[in-house]
Length: 175
Image (tube, rainbow, N blue to C red; front, side, top):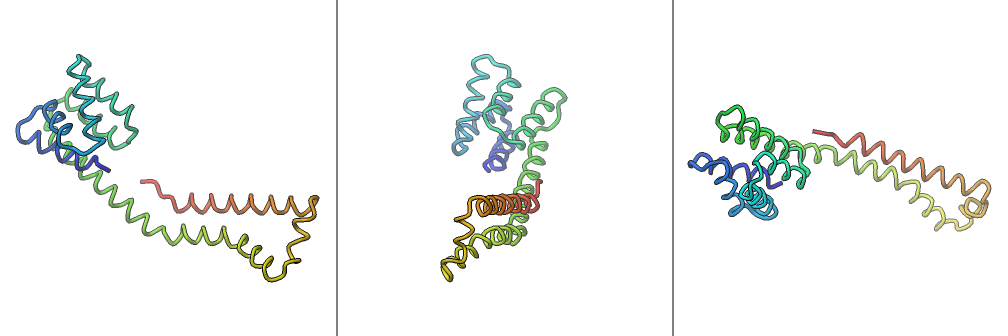
């Protein structure tokens, strides 16, 4: 969640004339936790003699993020090929912000489907409880008969779980 703001700090530092390492030092001072700690570790690793590419790979290993992986890949490519890193990071920052915004919009749009899935999953259980309260003896044979009733309860619960999983998979849209 902090990555777009961190990229903004990085871009501003690069545009003000800082080197990549100086920009990372500025991020380690100015960014909120845990970003500042992670970038401080990268700076310390480089100061201890570890190659910057390896230090950035260690960062990816510590922080499991596809977006951060994209940023580090862009930094490594820019170091080999050259170009304006500030512009590259600015484009990545815009992309990440738009992706976060799109994820929020999709989550809002799929809310009805998720809650419908919850309702459909809980309805049979609620109906069984309701029937037990209205007519206490109505559901008793199902629980008393271990040969037929218990397997039916197990099958019913398994089907409810499978249905819930399928509905959640349908409304979980990957970006």
